[in-house]
Length: 132
Image (cartoon, rainbow, N blue to C red; front, top):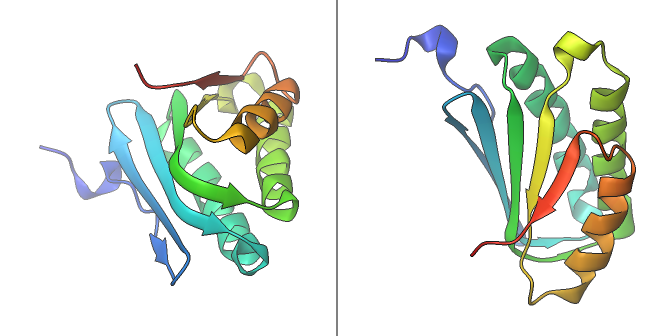
């Protein structure tokens, strides 16, 4: 049984275009983005990623899985929020770093280009995968 202290305290976000959710999976945290991340999603994504980082450190997560399989679109400003998050993890002390794995949808070309670019910011921490 998991104690209250071990539970993920990450508020989900939903509006008419975008849903952000998270769950703890063993020593990892898995988040999922569904819908469209346009200009209205910048602030919610930024806040969500800040909360995610705090929770990752609190729980001692070894990895964060970022599921983009159901994310149809993300604008460059929202991608910048991910760059900021990745940079923060990369610049943290080694004991506060965790791996980041983006799970992409191979049918969406924008993901291939954008996620490859994100992986270049911290190649030792960030990987991109596609489901089998």
